[in-house]
Image 1 (cartoon, rainbow, N blue to C red):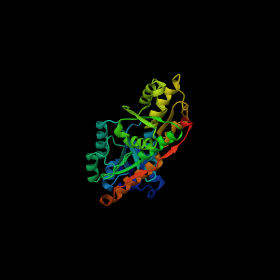
Image 2 (image 1 turned 180 degrees about the horizontal axis):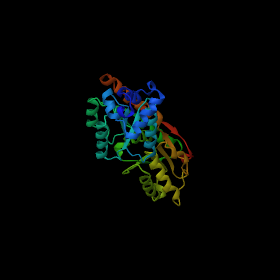
Image 3 (image 1 turned 90 degrees about the horizontal axis):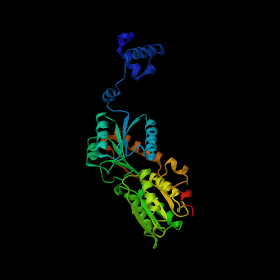
Image 4 (image 1 turned 45 degrees about the horizontal axis):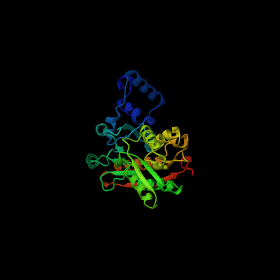
Length: 326
């Protein structure tokens, strides 16, 4: 390329790495030659030579869930502010796919990984970080492991959601969510709130996943129950379950939301406020989650073995809307 542009190899290097040192005429000449030859810069090789990259890998549970899409966008912005880029993958809650993305990111020598794991911090993840790969887990409190973690305090979130329902006079609460190990902290918080009111009950409606369709199926099941045994409140382990249940209940002939059944969700996705009955929910501070996760992974990358693993639990916030009106 240098010969074709009739410049030195050093000038080409400056165009690629320090363009401010090159005159506008020479810069235009070399860039024109690159276009003519179809040159594509090998950033991976460059990163290896320089001893570090500027790319982070991120794995979310399901990019079809607006919460994870919104969190990924927030991470992208937080990383960009630090001069980094983020590449994404969605595990779709499949072990094999999660493993394949981890392999891919390791092969690509990313500077660090941000992972929403299927089943917590696995031994493989612990080995990765012990080998020097900076790694931060989302949506899980991984205290005691070899990885950093950033999550909302789900136990407190579950407590706030159900306490609010009880404070509005509801007494028969249905918890929609599964697999249970993925939402266990929210379930435990819900149980804690129920235990404080003598005549209150809590029933778990297990779901295979946490989608709108799963929520609709549970809503249809609840609407079909005899009125005397029907829950008068629903706590969805995420907003999609709550919104799906609301869709079914709104269509039912003899049920009104919130008169007969109040509903609370979890995540505060953008759609929650614009639902046919605006949804009360537990707000997850996506920007704070993203900022802290990016800070931790880049700190680990910069300090290496001197890095102390942190396990952050961010405080939840109840957002009250019409779906729980008295």
